[in-house]
Image 1 (cartoon, rainbow, N blue to C red):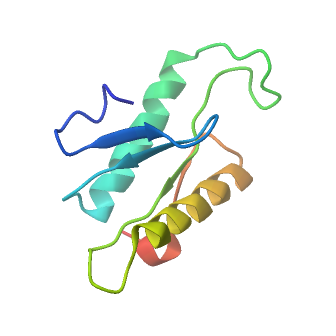
Image 2: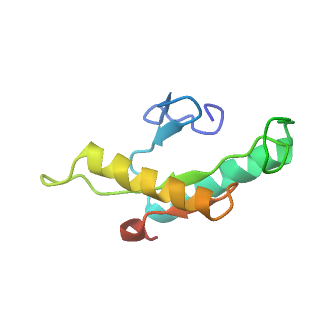
Image 3: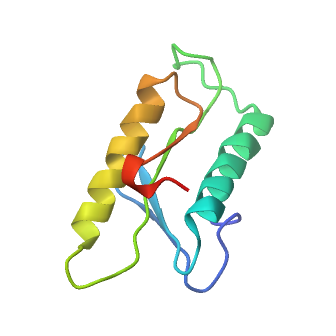
Length: 106
């Protein structure tokens, strides 16, 4: 992921065992969605074996995309909550895909 998101303002960090966050500043919703889909596709093409995976046997990524324009009344916690909801929507829909927060539609 650090090879994909290389701008000085891009932030890639592990937030849990298998979960990461990517913070992108000055990126439109449409471009954020495009970048997330490209990440999913790039990993799919690598076909890294994952014998412990009951889904497909290869490493995959599910992504949740959320965005907002910073204003006084919104918070980073709200952005993370929306991205997390979208992530679980992608997982529930079969994994290895991207979902975007309903109020972040591109």
